[in-house]
Length: 279
Image 1 (cartoon, rainbow, N blue to C red):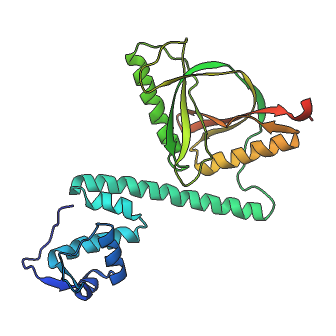
Image 2 (image 1 turned 45 degrees about the vertical axis):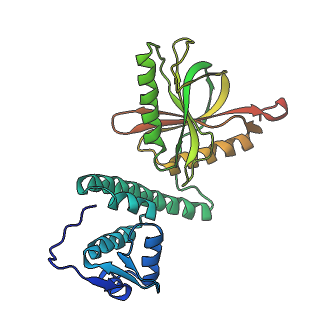
Image 3 (image 1 turned 180 degrees about the vertical axis):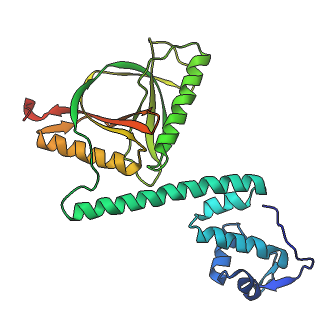
């Protein structure tokens, strides 16, 4: 990020002086040097490090971004951009942080309820329904539990655009398969767009086919769905399987639709009765 400073002089600063000017510890400065975020302007043969006074503002910016709780990888992205692009990226990162903080508060309330033997998240009734067979165009993507809805919807738009350019008709009912559990880390998911009929697909897409399956379904209606909502719903579905002497098959499936004042998310999980019985 280009420096903006009112200083008209430039001088050498020892690591002690630079640490005092930026309120960054010598240990932090060595780390930022290793990460190529804030490199000393000169290193003497005896190991003494010196900075230019022009670097003070960059050091203070890095300190402020660290106070925001940003990881060093994101800080490197911000300070490496021009001011306008950096401002846009910083706004996106701040939005991600706000969602994470909201998630933490919701998880805290859920944990309190669990400690007292009750769920703090009111979930609708679980119903049984058959998921119809479908021929789909699919593509894997990765996401964490905070951004998966936005990324899934972008994936669906991308798949639909590829199909439209290839002249392939689609059907309604796009869905997301959770190939790996939702977590704070990036995990594998799969976007599926049903096709009106089987057809050769353009590069980048895979043709898939799913059989009809009996599923337990739980709908989160007219609410902004968070990762904790989905995790709580999956917990409820698994507990339902246990109570009904069933076992889950395959992976959970999510469908997401706009309903004006929020999202309607349905979580489905295919199951089979244990020993051929259902209680």
